Amino acid sequence: HHSQALPPRTPQGRVKITSNEILDALKDAMQKNPSGDGFTIRELRMSMGKGGELASEIMVRDGVRKLLQSGKAVTVRLYRPAMDGTLRNVSGYLLVKKGKK
Image (cartoon, rainbow, N blue to C red; front, top):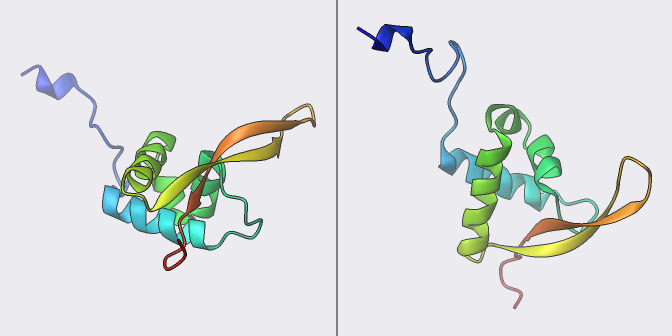
């Protein structure tokens, strides 16, 4: 069998995270929004706690895309310090507050 030669798709002992769990973790993370201006993908992933460790950046991006498509989040412009210390205009995401139109 050739199939024996293929490495397993997930390393042993790694817990898989579902897209629903990512969405829940994203929503939780986005509700704790100290700056009030939104999050970058990286900041979201870091604030997701355990979920962020299990979710790849691609999975987080997909989750954010679903929130955007369903109208639960919006894209905002954020200013974040770059490595050289200058503020850069980057894409961020903000959870839409329920009840406020």
